[in-house]
Every structure is written in structure tokens, then in C-alpha cells.
Length: 86
Image (cartoon, rainbow, N blue to C red; front, side):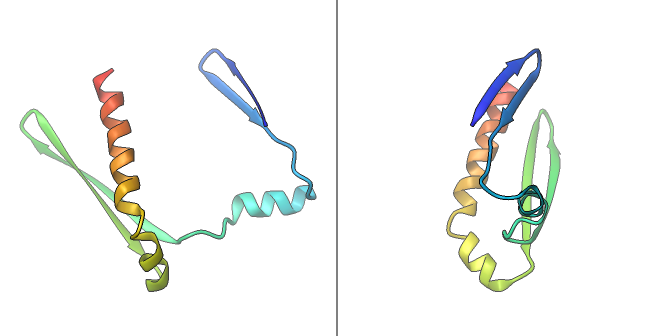
């Protein structure tokens, strides 16, 4: 993998030992959990409550994802907080 940085830009490239069509299909049609995410931003005076709702289309995928989604969502919200503190 190769990454370069310019002004406000990061360019990353990597070569794969697969044909372009296969790489593009894997990129555009990932075999991952299908879910709908709704984020709401509730005003609380000078504060804001962010609520994530993730609705999984398949119960089995929900059962698998629930093992790590809560922790991952907390990490995402921690990153958001860090951006807000800048």
C-alpha cells in the first residue's frame, strides 16, 4: 500500500492480484451487514444528544454485529467529540 499527502488530500493506492472487474465488484458490492442507520441530533440547551439507530435486515447479522457495534459506535462518538474539541 502506498499513501501520499497533499494539501487537504490523502491518496492511497494498492495493487491486488485480481482482475479489475473482480476488484470493482468487491468494492461496490461488499459482502457485509445490511442495515439502515438513522442518526438524530437532539438539542438540549447548549448540549446535543446524538442517537444512532441501526436496523439490521437479517436477524442473524444483527446477532453477529451486536457483539461489537456498541463498542464501535462509542469509538465513533469519541472521534466526533475529539473533532468538536479542536
